[in-house]
Length: 72
Image 1: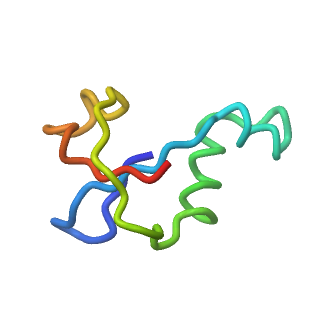
Image 2: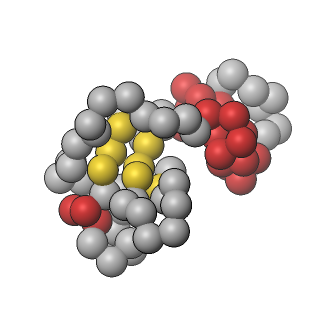
């Protein structure tokens, strides 16, 4: 999940193991439903500084994927 805490702020990414996260909910819950659950209930100020990872999770979602700060 990629998000900004405020307009113009840095892009923050949180990585979820979807199958493990989904197992906590109704099996009929859609991916969109899980994203809503994460957004409404899970996003808090991340702890620690996060890190820039050499991964392709943000390719095509933001102009510079290497600028995303990730918490995993």
